[in-house]
Image (cartoon, rainbow, N blue to C red; front, top):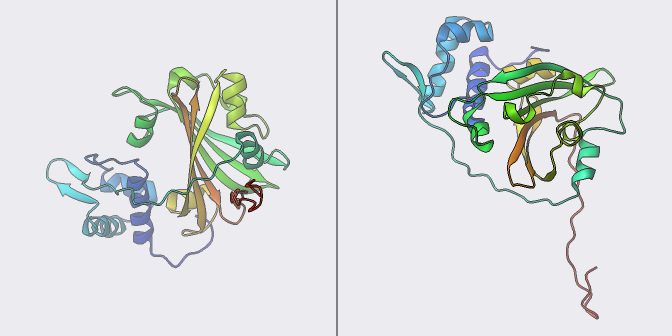
Length: 257
C-alpha cells in the first residue's frame, strides 16, 4: 500500500471486507475465506483478522457458524437517492475514455471467474456459470488514474483478450467493433467511495483516498445486458460535468429558453 495512513490495519481489513459485501462479492449466506486465508490475503496477523471480523460481527454483517465458517448474514438495503442525468452516449465515451489525452492502459487480468452474485444476476448468468472478467489499470503521464473491471458471459465476450485493448482503446469500441454488439443504451450509476486495502494497492493511493465508483450496464437491441463495467476513478483525476435543460418557458410565446 502506498504512503502512510493513520487507520489501524484491523480497521482497514474490516472496511475492505465490508465493501466486498456491499458490492456483492460476498452475498448473503456465503462463507467468507477462513482467517488463515485472510491473513495471507492481507499480509496481517491473526489478531488483526480477529479484530476485523469482530467489528463486522458487531455491525451485524457476519456470523460464525460451527462446522461451516464465517457466514454473511446481512446485506445492505438500497436507500440511495438516484439522480437521473441524461446525455449523449458518444460524448460520454469520448470524454470518459480520454480520447483527447495520452491515456495508457495495462490489462492485468483476463479470464473466467466466479463473479459476484449481483453482477451474475445483472447478466442473467445460469446457475454455476462463470463469468468472463477483464481487469485494467489506466494511466496518464505515467500516473495511475483508474481501475476498470469488465464482466460478461463467456459466450458473448470470451474471445476478447489483452490484445483487443491496445493503446488507449475503450471497452465500448471493442464491444461494437470486435464483438458486433449493437448497443442502444448504457445505464450508469455513480457513487462516492474511498480506497480500501484492495483499491489502495491497485491505484497507488492511501487507504481512505476519495474515489468515484461507476457502474455501467450496456444493453443491446434485444434488451439484454451485454456487459457490466465497474470503474474506480481517483477523485484527484476525475470530475463529472453535464448540462441540464431547465425547461424555462418564454412567457410571451410559450417556447422554452
